[in-house]
Each structure stands twice: as C-alpha cells, then as structure tokens.
Image (cartoon, rainbow, N blue to C red; front, side, top):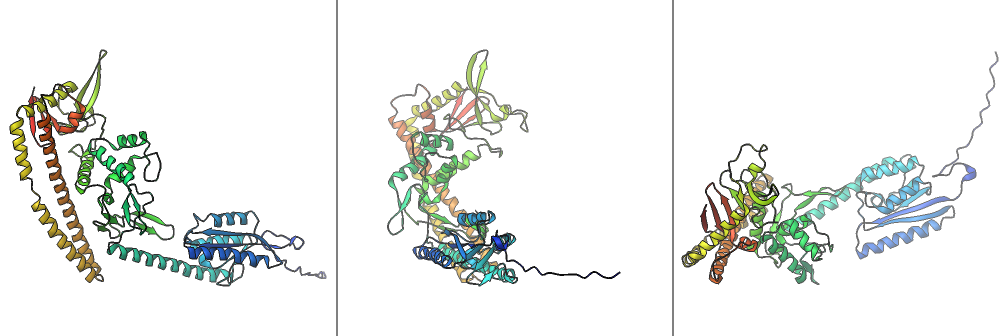
Length: 524
C-alpha cells in the first residue's frame, strides 16, 4: 500500500498576555504598577509620591499599554503581605482578569520574603501575568526569570534580616546605656514634653493613684474595674470599657515608680513579626529612676505583696478566688488545716442566716481529708472583732506605749547597707560583662549572678516596704485608740477593713490579729 502524503501546516504562535485569548482579541496590554515604602518619614513619603508619579507617567507614555492603576502601600513592612492591603487588592484584581502586566521598582519593594516573592510570582505566572522588576531587569515570564528571581529574592531577604539585626543591636546598645523609649500614647498617667521626655499627666496620674488606693483598701480587680466604668473614667487607650487585665497591668508596672524594665518582649520571627514574652531568651535591662514616679516605691511593694497574698490564700497551694464583696473575705482562716473560711448562706425552714465555714468542709468529698473545723455564725465572728477592738481600747495606754516602742525599734539601716553592697556588686559584674563580652560562657555565668543579686535586692526592698507598712499600721492604730471616744458598740465593715489583718478560728477561741501586729484572743 502506498503511503499517504502528509501535509504539515505551521500555525504561528500567538502571544497571549494575561487574560487575552486570541489574536483577534488582542488589545492594549493592561498594565499596573506596585510601589511601597516601609516607613512614615517625610523623606520616604517623597519617595512614595515620586514612585506613583513615575509609574503613572511611564505607563501612559506607552501607546500599546492601557493604564490600570498604581497600587501603593505606604509605611508598610515588606517582610510579609498580611497587612499590605494594596498588594492584596492587586493580586485579587489579577485573579479577576483586570491586569496583564505588573511593573515594580525592585524585588525588595515587591517582597523581602523569598517564599512570598516566589509564591506570588508563580501564582501570577500561572495566570499568564508577568511581573517586571526594573532594578534587576527581570521578567518573570522569561525562561531564566525564576532562577534569577530566586537568587535576588534571597538576597533581598538577607538584606532585610541584616537590617533588622542592626536595628536590634542598636536597641540593645541603647538599653545598655539606660536610654528608655516608651510609647506613651496608651500609657495611662504619662505623656511627653517637647523634648520627648516622659512626664506625668496630672489628671491621669490621679486615676492611677486611685487604682492603687482602692486595691490596698481591699477592692478586687473586678470591683475596681466596675467603679471606674461607673464613674465614666477612660483607660489608657481612651476607652470607657475596662478589663481586669488593665487593672493588673497598672498595679504591676514598674514604670509607675519611675523605673523601666526593658526588653520584656522580643521578636521571635523577623518575617512574620511575631513577638513573645521574654522569659530569659534575651537579656533584660532594669533602669532605676528613668523618669518621675507616680507611685511611691513602698506602696508598689505593698501592692505586689498583696497580689501574691490573694493569689495564694491557702498555704497548701490550692488556689482560692479572692472576693472583695465582704470585708472579711480572704481574712478568716481555719486553725486546723489553715484553709480560708467562706461565707455561706443558710436557709433553715425559712429562717435565713449567714455563716462562715472552712472551705475544706464546704468542698467535702473533693479534698484529701475531712477537716473537723466548726461553722461560725457571722454575728459571732463580727462580735469577736468588736470584743478584740474593745480589749485594745480598755488597755489603750499600755498598747499605745508598746506600739510606740515597736515603731522606734523598726530600723532600716541594715537594709540600706545591704542594698548599697548589692549595688556595688552589680556594678562590678556589669563591668566584667562588658570587658568579657566575647566569652559567652563567662557572660552567662555573670548574667546568672546578676539575676540572683537582683532577686536579693527585690527581696530587701519588699522587706523594707513591709517594715514601712507595719510602722504605718502601728501609727494608724495609735491614732485610732487616741481618737476613740468610747468602746465600740457595733460591728462595721469599715472598722474591719481598717484594723483587722487576720482571723483564725479554733475550736474554743477566735484569734483576731490586728494590722498593728497585736493579737487578741476571744474566748467562747
């Protein structure tokens, strides 16, 4: 059989750009441009406007091009695309077939993240959309485009990481010099003067002092939150809605005593900008006296001790929730197991009453043992407080004399000498760290020693605050007894909050410890 002759006709390739399909459909190429500046400085803003103007004029000068839009992100980082709204809008328009070609100044303007850069250029290439990088002269539709792009994108990412490392080194050096930079915009109690120094906002400072005062008066985070909202007082962000976490942050922020703990958080990943609490991964820097204080150091230490006390109301380690609804909440303890007493409402055949019971008995069946502690009627507990106060009043001359002697014997010279000695050791260790910065093992040993000394220093400051607080309590008790015209006739919540520190329930007696340190036994 004779072979059939084959007639082969060559059909020329038709260049297809973007969403264009056939030669008949080929019109002007729809061109967009993308530009970005990463800071909000005046110099960069000029660059931003110049880029927009440049691309607008350049695209319109090409008769075969049709101007789509100049997409521009101003003041946005290029290490990820999450917050680059214009970039994401441009990609969406590409997917919708509105763009055939994208012009951009350089790879670093498009993305400093290698993975993101390749991800989006490949995505656009699959849509037959080219990206042209002017500085590198790379067109992603060329055969060698992706190889060059991968190399150049990696270099752009390395440049970003190097820049970030330099910034971190600068911040670390500034921290070592004790130069404090604080964002005051949402920082309740402070603002900045014309020179950028942190100064007290008198009106807001009163709110901070109120929070500390209410907490030491026995109020819980929740109660303080509600009182601020009820009075229409805004928080640091200017919102009328408060959170318990706001109160806790204010009560534990060392900046209110004029100090500053630097590098509390650190950047975990440069590319996705994730930050985490610094739990020893990076060095911290504690700067004392960096600015004017709103709260006295002694008051701050008292609050710190009270926060710890409320968080650990039970000595066996079982956490009890603190409530400030009643003056005696968190103040009454069991003489058998050491747990706290809780207020319980009883309804016996329509007869309602309030009693206090050991939590170990209230939670019977959930505890490791059955506590034999007795239940105490609320009026009996209140009566014991009245009796204890009246006993002190009956012996007021002897009590006042004893308290005055105790005040005179409460000295601080030993604590001051210990702090001076620790400060000298800290200065010496800091100098050793600077002199041996290249010896990482030695530096870590010195850091551990510094941490231990700083802990000792904080303990001494806490002890000093306790002594100061005890002096204040003894003086308050003296003033109360001297001003007290006669014996107390009835219980009051204000009386309990002012004078009572702790109440311990035993089988046959109640021990009332007053805030002055006096212990009064009330037999039953």
